Image (tube, rainbow, N blue to C red; front, side, top):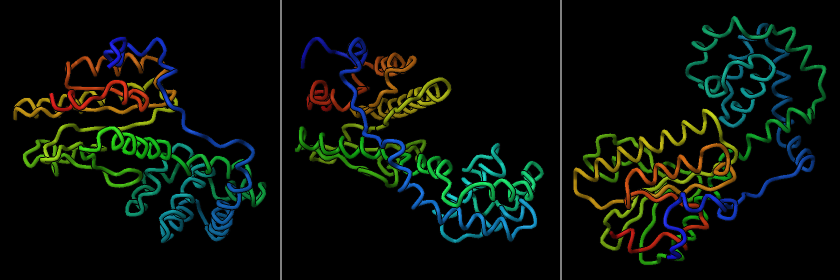
Length: 291
C-alpha cells in the first residue's frame, strides 16, 4: 500500500483525481427518444382528462390503470398538472387511492383548468417529455457503480466471493445473513465471503451525483447508524466482519461530504473503510479483510 494514503481523509486534497464520473446524455439530443417514449403517456392522460368530471375522478381513473409503468408515468404527469405538492411516491400507491383523494383532493387543481392547460400544449410536449426522461435513468448510475465494483473486486480477489444484486435487484437483508440479527430487515448491497463461507465484510454502494444540505446529512447519518448497528452486533458476537462503504461521484466533493465519510471511517478504527472505485487497488487488501 502506498504509505502516502492511509485513510479516506488523506485523499481529500486531490479528491477530484479519485472519483469516477458516470456518463450522461446531452440536451437536446434526448428529445426525440423522450417524446417517442412518453407521447403514449400524454395521449392517455389527455383521454382520461376528457372523460373525467373532476380531478378526483381523474386520479381515480389513473389509479385503475393496470400497467405499473404507465400508472407511475401518469401519476408524474398528474402531479405536474393537478397536484404539485403531492409526492409521486404517495400518488402511485394504488391501494390508497381513495384515502389519498379524500385527504388531498380538495387541493387538486379544478379539472376545467387542467383541461385548458393540457389542451394548450402539443401532444409531443418536449418540455414535459424531457422532465419525465430525467426519471427514466434514476438509479442507473448506482447500478453501474455496483456492477463495476463486482467486476473490479473479482479481478483483484478471485479467491473471495462477493454476493448481492449487481444491478437492479432485491437488497440483501442482514436477517438472512445472521440468524439472530436484531434488525433483520436491515438492507445492504453486498456481502463478501471467504472460501469457508465466513462473512468478511458487509457493504453499501452509492453513487453521489450532487447531494448536499439535508440529503447529505440524511445519507451520512444513515451510514453512521448502520455502521454502529452492525459493528455493535459483530463486537458482541466476537466476529471480525468489516464494513465497506463504496461511494463515488462528484457529490463527494460538495459540502462536507468527504469529511463526513472520513469521520465515519475513523469512528471504528480498522473496522470501516470508505472507498471510491479508484481506491480499491490502492487501499483494499486481503490482509485488512482477514484482520
